[in-house]
Amino acid sequence: MKSIYSKKFSLFIRLVSIFFILIMLCLSYHAFYDVFFEHKYSCIIGLILGPISFALLCIIIIKPEKLALFVPSLIFFSITNSISNSNPAYPIIFMELTAILLWIRGFFNNHKIIKISFLSLIYLVPFFYGITFGYEEFFKRVFDSSQILLITFCIIFLLYEYLKSQKSENKVLNIAEYPETTKRDAQWLNLVQQGVKYEAIAIDYDLTLGTVQNRLNKIYHILETGDRVGFLSIYSNAKIVYQD
Image 1 (cartoon, helix red, strand yellow):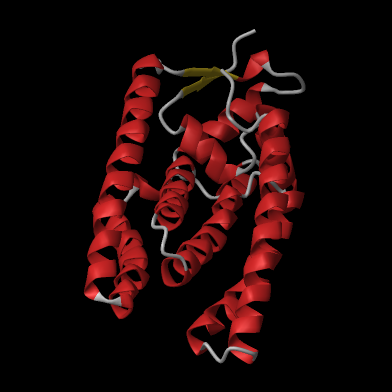
Image 2: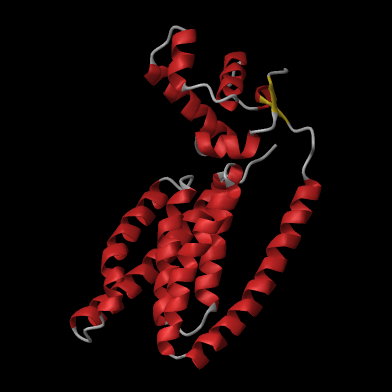
């Protein structure tokens, strides 16, 4: 079985991060100009979130498996566009991309309704800022946003249902198919899958915590899952075996 955390995928994430950095620098420049020269103090959020987004995107370039770090930057882009841009397509697409990334990382596995509601609220607050442009402009935004949201939701839903139909019900991860792996690696992955802490694994096998962490990180790299969260999001329901 292949995961999405391949070398090509990592390269793609790095390139996208660079592209978003360029967008962020442009937005930060406009925020700086609007605050200090146009005295539009509502844009001060760009001066605060801009450098934070820059730092997070730089981390993603180094470690592309940390997909969740995209989320603050995407929320920043969405809020900024909701406030300053009359086109509702950008904030909606940014927020949908945020939801997809969180879904890939397993964010919605628990307390799904609460998390979706909170994410929606983050978008709705700046969206209703559009009332300041007048009710006619606001209702136009609502109408345009509804169309965009419906179309993109249909696309995502159809793709999701298709991918789900292609997914094997009895997923088996055979560690022996990967080089440099052992039966103990399969045992450890089973323990991780069950929610056992690294500290407990180290105690059970009479090893140091650092040894366990380093080995599991190497296994995640071999499996191309990135890290523990990536492994659990992909193989949470898989049967893990070691069969030569």
